[in-house]
Image (cartoon, rainbow, N blue to C red; front, side, top):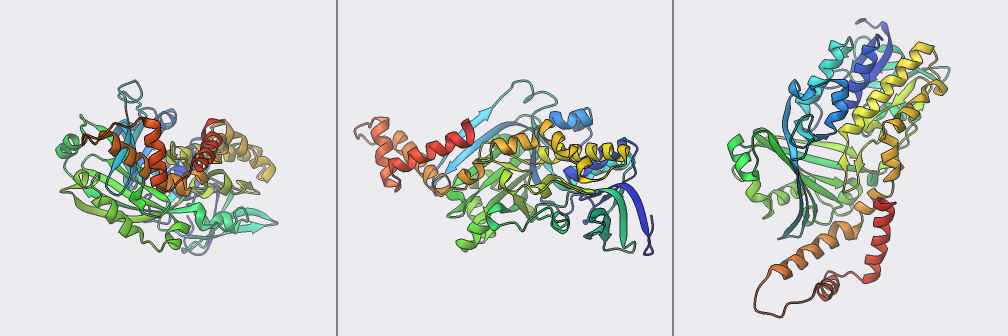
Length: 442
């Protein structure tokens, strides 16, 4: 590696050693290509927020059979709850399964701590032959005759040359913008996630969440937990800690002048959450930008000599029903790595050659899913779903379970009465039902 202002040439340069970048580097290195995997942190995952759930274990199992036996996973997710919150009440949809895939390998999902997981995944790319360069900030792409031919690195080597550059540098991708593939993102397209990792001993976690062995749970919250801000919250069980946090739409945080940290403290103090975190000790606090506009924020994904993958491409599915990103990051990284391998075999690095990436993204259902649910993000961040319907569900539940000797109401009159109390009209409900159908049913 050149270290004194010279340049080094690689077949593939991958910028960002998150799940997308490591997947791309791994597939390219396995094909025998020379690969540079560049990470701005001190190690892969150093700049990432700790708590996460990785759904799609079977995807990674095809790449690394039995990967969970060697990777630093925390717990396999056998239970998932969607919780609607009012200021004092919670109403949850609880899913738990002992079916194959949930209670047996390769399982459906795992809770992970990103610094550990990302470091392990990047090490798999290194073992395959990729060169990992850490503590290296990439400032720009290098272009010749309109084609990307490398990157400018803020270190002694100055620049690295490569036939294909794969940008996996996060939600607000600097490289995609420098290459002219991404526009300036709007604040309503990004959410700010603030997370904490709270230490709690294993025995307490198992008892408190009714778990056995390495079982884990993922709880996702919407409603009053974020006050007037459009967003949500989550709580995941790790081996000896809890990962919890708040996601707030940037534009909504600014509009309502709310601080994410204050929302996080209010979330932890909610009567449905406080007993779950009681007695824990703070281990980590961090923040991260998350792309949540889905299909509408996807940039141009390929150009002459460059591909865009992972969060840099907006590959996060935040639909309320599906809240996934790492699996799409890995799938897009594998697609980008495969497209780069084929381009190197043909020695054709033009956009027409790299267009193969789009076909691979559809085959791996990345673009297929984002396009199918393109209307969902706007509905999920709508005022009534965020603030009205959780309150509606809470009030109806309170009425149903309160016994005070009063006359029992039939469900339909109770529903219409409560609807008026929360300030929503029937026509609003009908309109939202249409949006539900458009977003989720067809």
